[in-house]
Image 1 (cartoon, rainbow over the protein chains, first blue to last red):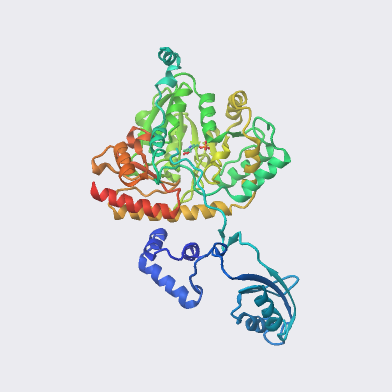
Image 2: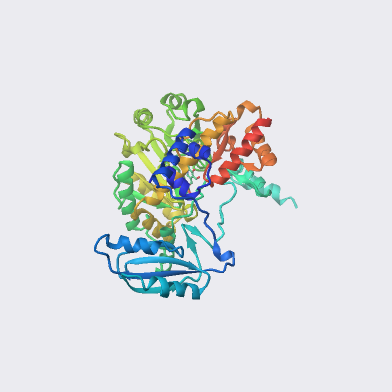
Length: 159
Length: 391
Ligand SMILES: Cc1ncc(COP(=O)(O)O)c(C=O)c1O
């Protein structure tokens, strides 16, 4: 992966000037490359990594395994695309193995998620079955540990 | 009671007359202060790779809590032999040419003790790692320091060695990539040194603990040059590239006769390196080197940032090419290195080690380790800029 993208993936707020220093290239080049990635759609957005467990939100997250019948034209894409359009779906992946689609669903509470599954998802043409799991606690998200304070055990000066 | 006076006189004179490491003194001051950003830490800020730590726990559960053979587990020596052949271009027989030690620190010590007769001279280059002069003296040798220069990228040249060499010189110690300067030697630089060592029939001890950490040019080892393997003790360890400093694990490779001699000192003074650490090292070596590559990329980005930041604030610094140290000149401010470092610490709460901790010729320089987070580096550079702007 382009080193520029690696830097942005760890800290999207890094200034372009600093990124230019790290990569030893002119700042204008960094501006241009980032603009190009945004235009190509390689960079789709910039988000903060939140530790939501700390926020006491009225919110539950469910992971749903979905078995579907691929369509004659468009295979899995047509049905996956239809499902992804629901705002309740925060992530959707095509999987190998025992089921086809893996969805991450967000709702206010258990009842709301259940309603989404039984009223919207399950009745869709092509959906064969669903299996819903609720998330209890987040330990690590997007490569970031959520419950561990980083600690530096090193001496403050060493040879 | 005046016992302290008489005890002082009973201490071995060599030990008594060697000062404590300048690093130690500086550390004592830094620890009294709060919220200091430290560029003074000569060890990686990365965590030891998780698979290595996992393997350590597993080894503990499996009971790897006993002595290993004096040389170290044969499985580890085999892995080391393969690793050294692949990356350094020298083949060593794991049965009798590889010795596992308690860090490169022990390896340096026992190599010197195994080789030096009282009064024999050892050439080494300064500024250098804090232990070199002391370990030469402890071993009864006579240290001959050769000064490397900023204008020459802190590289060692044949002329410098010739100026100090005498017929009583037996050993040459090398350390590239270098602590504290970040200097490296390319193949051509090393060829001159190797020719000199062969001509003068010197034994070479090469400390290549930072070999994996080079940023623009690949590392070359002097052992890979013609006629060098048979006169060289190659030292390496797990502290830097694998961020395993606390494991205390290193190794020496060399001709069987020399390894046998070092093994004797090791056998009678250390017995063997930690078994658990050895098990962890097997894991570190036999897994793909992904973790090391990622670390190198991150150090390179920091190196680039620091080099530009120094240039922006008008601090002269030769380009650091290896290890994780930059060694800028602060001579133009007219302060001694130590005073500069102390003032920087007090005024801006940034710790960086005075160049003199690495030899007298480090006067006028400051060692800035970039083994710390990018956020710390940014903040430290901003503070340093403010500080130098006021001097
Ligand atoms: C050049 C050099 N040699 C040896 C060592 C000591 O290494 P170890 O942890 O393997 O004893 C260091 C540590 O800073 C070093 O910089």
